[in-house]
Amino acid sequence: MDKSASLCAPGSVTESEPPHRPTGTDEPKPLPGAVAFLNMGLAAAVCVGVGLLLGLWADSAWHTSPILLVVGLVLGLAAAAASVVAQIRKYL
Image (cartoon, rainbow, N blue to C red):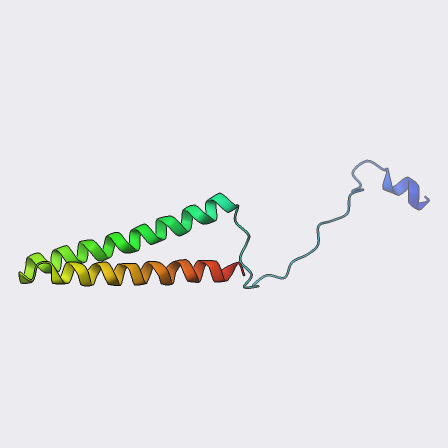
């Protein structure tokens, strides 16, 4: 049987296989643009929100209003900035 006949035989695969990627690589999978920005915005909002809530709780527990609220806000903003920078560096 010649080679051209075996390529068209029933059950044979005529399409080339996709290139093999080694497993365990640290390269992030590219996200669609809108999803990546949504992830960054959500992470920033959660960081700021958690900082504010912890600041409010600490102010009510220790009666230091508004000092710890401001401290929580600053820490939340710093955490949000660090999170966004870390997410951007994955794709640079």
